[in-house]
Structures are given as C-alpha cells and as structure tokens.
Image 1 (spheres, helix red, strand yellow):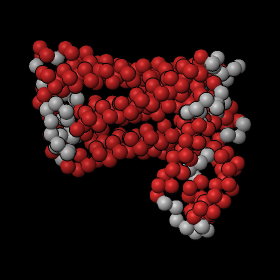
Image 2 (tube, rainbow, N blue to C red):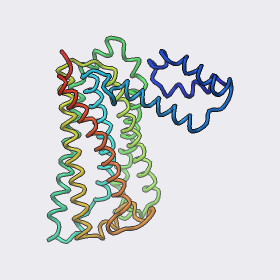
Image 3 (cartoon, one colour):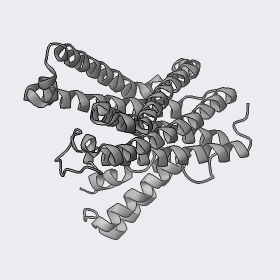
Image 4 (tube, rainbow, N blue to C red):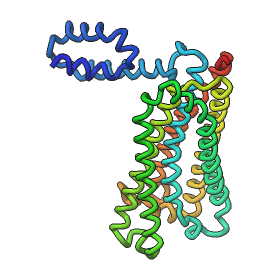
Length: 316
C-alpha cells in the first residue's frame, strides 16, 4: 500500500522535517513510483541516508545551522555514546586479562602491570566523572519534568531502569552462584554456568545501551543553564581524554604481553572463535574495534564542543 510505503520511508526523517516537507515527499514518491509501486533498493537507501542526515543536522551533530549551545550539547552526546562503547570494550578486556600476571614472567611484567593499572584507573575515573555529570544535570532534569517534558523521555528512561534492574539481579545471582563453585567450574568446567555468564553479559550490554539511549534523550530535551552546559561539555572533553588514555593502556598491555607472554593471549577468552592467535586474539580485536569506534565518536564530539566554544559557547 502507498500509505505504508510512504510512512516507512518518512519515519527516517525527523518529525519537524516531516511536518514541513512530508507532503512534498509523498507526492514525489507517487509521481515517480505510482500509487503502490515499489521503491528500488538504491533509492530506498538514498532516502534513508538523507533522513539520517537530516536527523543528525537537526540534532546538531553535523553542519553549522545550529547555534553554539546546540552544537555543544550534540558534542557531549557524541562523547557519551563513545564512552558506552569503551565501557563494553573495557569489560571484555577485564575478563580477557583476568589473572594475566600468573602467565607472565616476573621480570617482564612491569610494562604490562603499569599499563593494566592505567586502564583500571582511567576507567574508574571515567565512571566517576560520568556519575558527577549526571549529578550536575539533575536540576535541569527536574526542570524538564516540571515543564511537562517527562512524556518525551518517559519510555527510554523506564526501559533503561528495567534493563539495569534486570542486569543487576542477574549479576547478583551469578555472583552468588560463583562463590559456591570451584575455579574449574567457573572457567569452563560447568557449561550451565558458562551459559548463564553469557546471558548476564548480554543483559549488561543491553542495559548499558538502553541507559545510553535514555541519557541521549534526556540531554536532547532538557534545557540546562549556559553555565551548566559549559560544565557538562568540559566534563565530556575530560572523558574523551580518559578514553584516549584507556586505549593507550590497552595497546601497551597488548604489545607487552605479545612480546613477553604470548601464551596469555592464546589462552584468553574467545580463543578459537573463529581462530586462535598468540599475538592477535579475536577478543582483543573486538576490544580494539570498539575502543576505536568509541574514540572516533568522542573525538568528533570534542571537536564539536571546541568549535562551539570558539563561537562564544551558549549564551546565558
């Protein structure tokens, strides 16, 4: 049906754009493809790309049509999204490097040890900084609720709360069970425990994804004072720096272990899926890819913030 076809394509565009240009696009689709004709895959992809571009432009992620405040807000959102990817990568790295020191010669541990500590400290500081930023944003969130904006963020916030609660319960159950198992059972000897561990990991990643979506929705709808927005943007820049330090620490640990204790990399989690390697294990490839993607988002956001600041930043 024509209406279904048009609505599917129009949903890729932001609501403000649809209100202004939606009828024109519907008329264009009907003239070109007929009342019920199918749209070729190439043209569909072009429309989807254009819709996503409009969403990015409206959100202040690209272009210069938005004011400094909106661009600073968008840059902070990009950093938050990048941080979510780095958190997932950090969790995988932490599990992969569990007990790494037992397989590394004592004389060759110092680089890996320092690098591992840097990753741990930078990750902890990043989490603390994120919590502080959330605390700073509480008054703006309260104003959002008072002016009736809760309806626009209720669904993602509720979904995030349910996801976090479910992940916490699953993690608590796994931790309780782990305390009653032997080391052999916890490390592959008990398949049921391994399956539950995978489920908990998936639940944690889903909770993090939903929490990130909720944070983005709240940031986009709330209207913090100019001073608060500048503070949040500065925290986002600091978080980007911590992400870069974390990535550098992971790379240094990886190189050190590959040179001095390749067996640690070979025996880490994920070995054999889909291949084994003493130097480039699949799990660390995933860690590196996630961290690079997160850094690209974070550095893009930092550049966005810096350019907005050069324009004078948000006005009071």
